Every structure is written in structure tokens, then in C-alpha cells.
Length: 480
Ligand code: F0G
Image 1 (tube, rainbow, N blue to C red):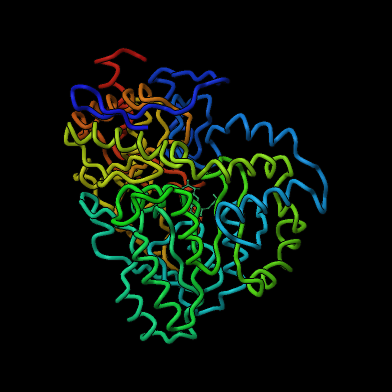
Image 2 (image 1 turned 120 degrees about the vertical axis):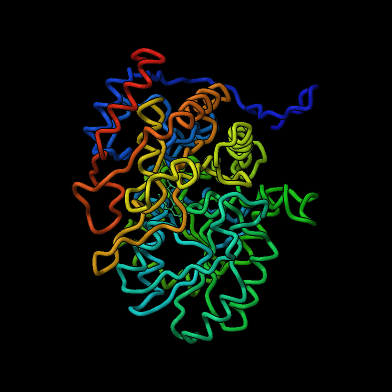
């Protein structure tokens, strides 16, 4: 909830209290330098013992509610026909309006099945913006993930409230250019992750639906961040202020033919699911489920996780849950704007994103500015963020670098995990880093896998800048 203080300031207040805690430690700067060296300057390779605040992602690291823990314990363990699955299916029907649902072990497993069934080599999948795993699945099948966004989507500092919109004219042009038969499906991603957690509007979703109808194309909604997008529509779109987040989420779902989500985000449970009202589509996917995931009443998840997902689905549309990280991110972004830190605006869902090309403009894209900034932030703070720039893109078939549209350091805000004082700590360290930004230099790859290289790739710093940054930090604060 946002509180307006008597002096006019606004700040987020958590609508939950902490009833179980996990100890965290801040290892000294020297140890952090050693840890990041050993991790090949890749924050995915760090161990949590060396991390103070883990802002890598909001996926699989959110705090579950007491009801979810109860669901976890009460779950009905059965290979087939578990009543917990039917409770889950009822929750999906009530909240999202879908009659048919199947679990998958996580979001990318849903993407795998959807890509496998609906895509053939040479196909095009138009999307408002790609996500890394979606694109990988589509490209493995030798199809093309084609981004059709408004130019504004990749302008980091903007006042456009719906940068996640798909450009309808470009979609029409694409259909005309490639022919309807070449389009596997049209994909809309809620709270579009890689452009800084930016939503699309309901109006845009409806327009895309109309085009899909005209051409009899399948519309797939990636709802991994569905509720944040619904919350943004509630707050930002004309005509939706009087509706509930739940009604908006359901309306969004009613527009898509096929829906999938990573439960690791909105439901705070490690799993995912595919849902639809189209029985024919459901029956097409179902036979592959036991091959890759598991029987249809568990789909690769444990019954216990499904038990926790039942309240998770019902609670995710509550404004205090759907909006909890959004309001923290808004505060985070606005505080950084006070000191002119280049961050993605308007504030999005999922994370506070720093525009690395503006923060460290002296680092060329070929030396991975967002990766370098992410490394530097860890050295000075113990905060683990994630590179979302060129390192997160793979090379093309000929080995050429594919430069990202934007270079972001993503400081994710998991749901109900961190407090405003944790954010203040990060804000302070980002400000210090900005004053010393000339100490940050580029990175180069030492070893580099061909697919999703950002997970396992190993890099090195140019000119030993990690040591110099660490020494400058220690000179001011000591080895803390
Ligand atoms: N779609 C979107 C929009 C996502 O953000 C993610 C995951 C997935 C699909 C895949 O889901 O992880 O359950 O397999 N995003 C995570 C992140 C990994 O850190 O942003 P998954």
C-alpha cells in the first residue's frame, strides 16, 4: 500500500508481517571480489553464502503466505487423480476463467510444449518482445521470434505508460509479408520482462486479438507477470480504475486462446501451468505432457507445490500482492531519479532497471556495459543483480555478436522478501558507484556456451578494474 506522508512524500508500506526469517550476511569487500572472480564475473555463478541481498530475480524466491504453507502441508499426494489438482483447477477457473489447465514444472516447460506443438521450421512467432527461454525454444525449432513493438519500447527514459504494447500496424505488415500460414502464433507477454517490466494496455491486447481473429491466428498470452500488468491497467488505463485487479486479470485471460505462466513469479510457487478454454487446443498439448512433464494431474510439479499454488492463484490478484513489488519498485526508481541515476521509466514491474549504456557510457556494447555494471554493483554492495543486455543474447549462427536493444542491470524485487531499508541500502551503493563510474571498465568472455550463454558463460575484467574498484571502496569505507 502507498502511504502519503504529511509532507507530501509517498512511500510503500508492506501489507504483511514477517513470521519466519532467514539470516543473511554481508561478506567483506575483499571476499566479494574473490567470489566474483571465481564466478567468472557472472552473477549466476555466485553462491548465496557470498550474497547479501539477492536481487537476481523475482522467480522462485518470493515469500509464500501462511495459507500457502498450509496448502503445502495439506496436499493430497497421488500420482493420478489428486484432489489437490482439482482444487487447483477450480482456483484457475474462478480467478482466471479457464476451464482446462495442466501443470508444467515451470514456465519454460510450458513454452517448450507450446513451441513444439504449434511451430514448424521457418515459422514466425510475432511477439511484443521476446523472453530468453521463449526465444530459445522457438529458435531450437528453427523458427523465428519476431519482435513487433512500438519504437518507444526500447527508449529507457519515457513517459509512455504502456511500453509493452505490440504495434498493430507492424503485426499487419508482418502477416502480409510472410503470409498467414507462416505465423505459428502471436505471443503477448504481460509486464514485458526484457524491456524493463513494462505493461501493455487492455486496449492494445484487444486490438491484437481483432487482428488475430481477422487472420485466424492463435493468440498466446505469457502471463508470468499477469497480475502486475493487471495492476498497471487498474492504475493507469482509462476506464479500469473502478474494476478490481481480479476482474482485469480475468478479462485479459478471456482475450487469449492459450495462456501459460511461470508460477515461480505471481503464485510464489516453483511450477507453472498452461490453461485455455479451447478443448481442442488442450487435447493437442495433453499427449505430450506425460512425455516431458508428468501425468496430467501433476505435470512435473510436486503435489505439495500445487497445494501451495491453490491459495497462490487466489491471492495473486489481491492488490496488496499484485502491487507489492510494483510499489517498492516505484519508490526505488523515484529515489534513484532524485540523484539523476539513469533508470528505466516509467517504473515497471519485477525490478528496478538501470540503463547501463547511460551509467557507463565509456564502455562499448562489445564489452558488455550491463554485465560490467552488474559486477561492479556486487563488488561494492554484495547485492546480486542480473545482466539483461548483450550477454543475455546469444551469437547468431555465424558467430556474430547480436547486440541487445538496451543494456540493463536488473535489480529484481522479489515479492514480500525485502523491506524499504534494504532498498535504501542499494540506493546508497548505486549512488556511490555512479560517482565512481569511471573506475568500471568492460568485460570479455573466457568461455561461452552457444545457447543461453548468460547462465554458464565465464568472463574476465579488462585492465583488472575489479581490484581498482574494490580498493577505492575500501579506501572510503574499509573492508566492509
Ligand atoms: N516468461 C517470462 C515472461 C518470464 O519472465 C520467465 C522467467 C519465463 C517465461 C520462464 O519461466 O523461469 O518458470 O521457466 N523469468 C525468470 C526471470 C527466469 O528471472 O525473469 P520459468
